[in-house]
Amino acid sequence: MATQTMDSIDGAGAPTPSSMWAMVLTGVTPSLAYIHVPVPLPGSHDLLLRVSACGVRVSDTILVDGQVPWARYPIIPGHEVVGEAVQVGHHVQGYSVGDRVGVPRLGWACAKCPVCLSGFEHLCRSARLTGLTQDGGMAQYICADYRFCVHLPSDPPASALAPLLCEGATAYRALRALGEARRIGLYGPAPATALAAELARTRGQEALVLHGGSSRATELDGALVFAPAQHLVPHALDAVAAGGLVVWVDDISDEPVGIAIPLPTRERQARSVAGATRRDVADLIALVTTSPIQPAVETFQMAAAEEALARLRTGRVTGSVVLLAE
Image (cartoon, rainbow, N blue to C red; front, side, top):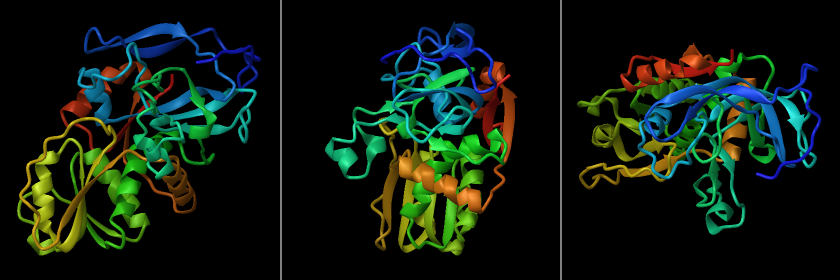
């Protein structure tokens, strides 16, 4: 990243420190180290944010467990980041010191390749992914390209906004992929299905959280199956009505997934959604600004990230998991 000289004063008028606490994954061992590292110096298109909250996803457990071979190490994980702008790059437009800002998974895309030009920028082969190939939000500060950030409303607590920036935005994209489906089945981990159910109801859709088995009586118009519950895709296909669509929902586009299903009959279909674009994130924030939701959230202090990850691994959470800055 290009660096430059900037005023080192944060939004509260205090000097920005030269170092910060962060959860760092070295890649040598499958564990996080809570250590002091330098505060990143923003480039000309960057915002330096003081982190308020950072969501934790199942995909973060996959990263920490060493199952994402193309991740950059050492890396600071975390990609659902709510923060306050404390420094603004010289070429930044539309943001000021003190603004409340959200940082999603997509940190940068080239905007030139056929994938980007087709509207799938989140699948860009050159994309930089927050918390995977560039440092994320399990820290006191984070740098982010303003063009891939989003303005956040001032009223909801940071813990309620963080899950919307990836988990919520990906679910929202998947719900839109279902088109006019009115009765939707949701399969997978509790945090993902609970948030998706809230979003579906906001969109005027009936959402049923299901766990496999025979669901023919429900006659679903469509269904979402969230990673890592690929074994439930056949159940979802069996539950949707003729012509129904099942969407496999993940936020790591290059992670191989083995899903064994019979050829869908009665013109049922299956497709995937892998992450979210800037438009998905912005549209979701606009929606919840006018139609607030109350996502179920479990909060932990930043230094307790390992505990939060352990609870996610073992399914001992019922809502979205969020780390709070200390």
